Image (cartoon, rainbow, N blue to C red; front, side, top):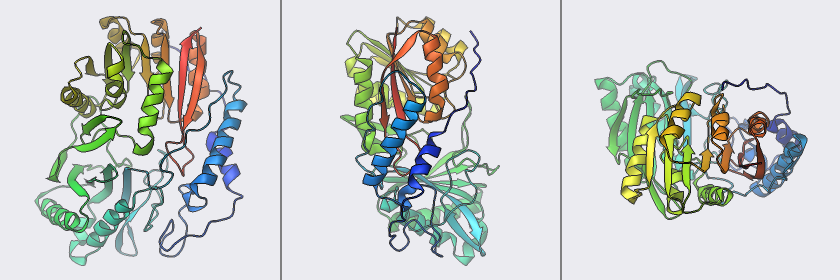
Length: 421
């Protein structure tokens, strides 16, 4: 059942949004906010230019135009506002780079082609929590010390993950020999003394200095992650559920909107106690475990071994006996085996990465005649192609809801509920 994915040209959403934002006047910036030492503005997002209320109105209008231009039959819901329009990102990063003989930590783009290129050094990023700025400032000052010049050159990235009250810091290093271990131990003590919210420090080794701040993990591959200090897991709360996960697991960047997001998934799927739910690309189990009380059973599938281990531990802590998690790539062949090994699955969640689903994935789900599916797009420019595949398989859009998961950026999260014709 291999299918060719048509390459249909269309106007990217980012173009529509940029066209609307570009003519607007520049807002007044405070010292160190969205700019480097020379006063050059960071333009990686629009938070440097407009406030969130104005941005929301513009983004919602651009989304409606984008949706209309694609000719979808179903009306698009209003953009769900983010409770935190600024200071919301609980996953942030900085690339270490050299400038005028000094090591600096700079913001980088999110696109694969530009990630790691042309880092921008600023004091305060408006879409990040203030404590993250304190962490990066503290680390940068330490790296600039003359006696640490050689050690500082081994730092690739500094990553911060956590929630709105606690932070875990991960150092991506090119080498981690005995000398670097001593250096990181001292830096960890300095950092945790200066920023009390830091409750964990880790090191991950990337000898190739790849452009990815977290090296790409293949199935059955183990990263060289080592705990230096503090708690081994990161804590996040969604609704009434408490989750723990390792620093290597994928996690949502905007916690302020996740509870509403999960609730809307449940509403779209119209879950009933007799339902069997399949959660594809499940991460550490946020969706399936949050919705497990409303279904007979839930099965999560994820390629990352770290995330699957975290999901299983979370299920055990919650005593969610109706949930199980499987480590597997999500492709046509594996999905066929998974469906064949399960009792009748009626509801499905798909939350694939930015490059979308593999050929055959949508087609297998449709062939199993599931009642409803929620397909989540973090890259909405893929919607036209992916939704055409659903249509060709006999499914229609029942509801579409955009979420402002990434305020300040040209990205939104689109939730599309599909049902069989």
